[in-house]
Length: 65
Image (cartoon, rainbow, N blue to C red; front, side, top):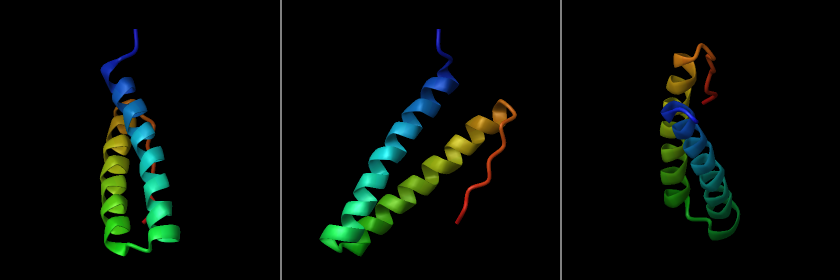
C-alpha cells in the first residue's frame, strides 16, 4: 500500500507537470504574463511542499529561484 506522503508527492509532481504546460502556453502563445506569474507562484508553493515531504524521508532538495 502506498503511503499518504508518497501519494501526495505523486499528486504534486503531476500538478507541477500540468503547471509547466500552462506556464509555457502563457509564455509562448497567449503572452498573458499575469496568468504565467500566477501559475509560477502556484508551482513554487507546490515545490516547497514537495521539498518538505522529501525532507521527512531524509531526501533534501534545494529549489532554484
